Image (cartoon, rainbow, N blue to C red; front, side):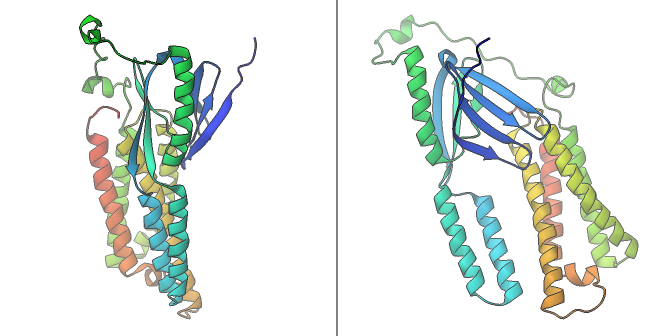
Length: 307
């Protein structure tokens, strides 16, 4: 059998759970979504493609912008020098400008509408989509004009396939949301434990909060791997990425606070965790954890079709 030659197209989408790439074959487009333990391949043949659309979604990446601003504020608070946060903000603004706005590229066939996730930057999509359209038109031909009686003489398209019923969605025919429901339920319990520890100072709750943080990390990794093997709605999938970002941000902020306590505040001996985390940071962390648990649980229990 003659091996199929592929050319990797520009653009690559990296997340904590998977990497998505797009390849150009002789008569089809191949989208590869790979995680640590599995790979998913989807082929779109040129003769089956009905449309390729680009939709601008945001002028900048708001998650990166928020992260840059937060890091600049923490650095300015830790050092007390305004030049460091201003430099970080300038570098971050340059970084966001070079990345450009984001977009959503959709490939429509007769049976499905697929998002080309690797083309999530507008600059990249504007380079790749014309190339794909050229290959598609070479197979299907280019429509120059449409007759006036085309609509009257054309045959109507078949109706779309029915959406899965709620019973089907609970029996494995559609994405299972039990993993996400359990995860966000655990976040609610963790928020309650942290609140009790902050306001009571009981030593046993300190160990429970630390163990919950470790379990939260393992749970995030497990849910990311599981959802990479299922068709999960976009909002629910993005909530897991936000949860992972919140965990890493909370842990890194705690390390910065400990660093500040030792080098800038002159704390000697054994550090008391209550001394490090008590304050505005603790309330922001608990509030974000509780809000994420409530929103995530609502999305997990709500039944709606995949986007």
